[in-house]
Image (tube, rainbow, N blue to C red; front, side, top):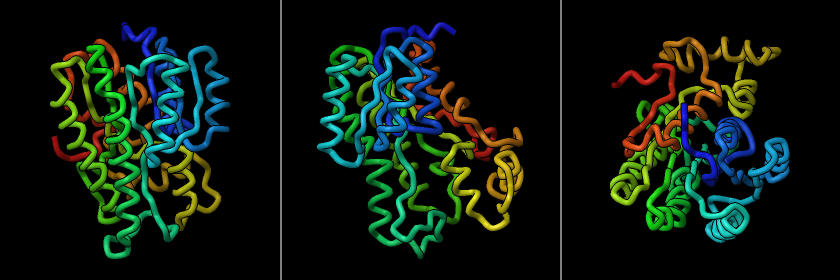
Length: 268
């Protein structure tokens, strides 16, 4: 596929591992200059060094407005104007240590932090970058959501509701900028085999002495029984969808939710 992305500049947040790292690598392979942003700048530096020319690692916190502004200014001074932004940073916030908690056990502070991390962080990034993209007449905004934003579980409702809000936010952004050449879409993965997910699964009862592959086989039937293809997703599965939406092949697609879920979500 001719993506026509050579020479573009992308920002990938949450790029230090898992899905974010895979997205950064996939875009770089298409000739894109890639800024990798996360709080763990040591991991980022290793990835950027591995990628070589056109990769730039920078530490920053998307939940801190001042930190984010400094990071964006540094990126554009180094690589030039940002054409593509992939808002991948996100996840659950917990003050108790437990992540998959029932509704009644989640305090207000954790609701607020989870929404800050998954929704307001994206608002800040897009607000900072989209107007300049529109002035140049070309841009791609790709927000990484979750199947939970469409099909929530009985636990971690704060996360599911934040991802649902992210979906609606993306639709509104798409309507705001479509006539100025800036396209905005969502990619919604299901259960993806990443270091963070493996770490969480390894802490669950029954996970003792299970290998990486055994973890997936053990937990898939009751965590995500609806995944029709019978396996967890891979970070590269998500990265391929992001590259497509960033490319000229997707120039008539905006405001959509591309679900990379192996059939997990039951609705059309």
